[in-house]
Image (cartoon, rainbow, N blue to C red; front, side, top):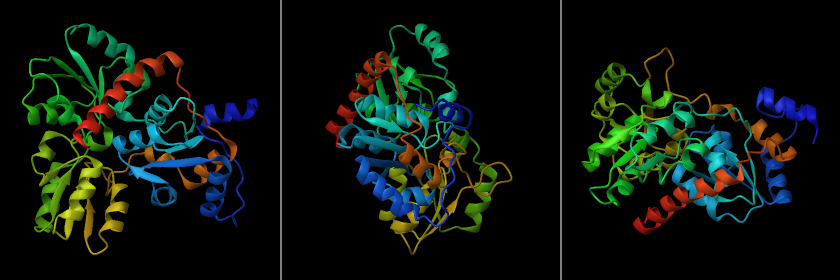
Length: 332
């Protein structure tokens, strides 16, 4: 492999190459997918062009389920690093590509594995449930992985006297504890996107749009969740906008989901909830590192590739598979 290309990826996170401006990237990507027997999995928080070219768009649970069952030789993961790692853990024989390997996650970064190991050692009789938004190393230390779609149901599926550590998201953990009535030991981590929604600005926005339904992701802080008409996973929020007769929605999650909401509900209005800064909406800077150009070059060059050490794959697959099994049993 070209050492210069690897150095460039280590430095920039992606392959940089001149692209003919006359190329129709949608057409070229479709050609490459057929040539390489590749599938593109994209998270709802990706830019609209990537969502539109993807073979499957979903939240963390749906993407994990899709990665586990695909018969493609190559998985191009348009998301962030921990998602590509999860795909590799579930399909270790597949080649997993990420358009930009510097597409990280503030929540995953908030829980370094070596510190979580010490935290876990304080509670030796506790079962460990980790939110999927964490590193492969953290999953390898877990008993069950969960997503925001199934976190409540997974906790409820366990005996009531089972002691539980929940990490890394303290807001999702607090929400799950409230919904289930369980006393969870929480790791103190959070997602930068969901933590900076402004209660004051949302209150003013609700006053300007009194008929709008305010919907929020459970990674938001409790003060924001208390204001919500509906709390749910990314897919849950999308489904709610389809089934609810309201014509206006204020949306407290990463703004990328609004593309799918508008496609599914062309006559309805969607307003991104404002964060506590000068920006009008909440974009994840990591999710938005991926672009259509980077996706094309990634598929064309077969780089950057995401790998996970075999021993981590062996340990991490069990808690992820346990999540998938419980979700299948519950019809999620």
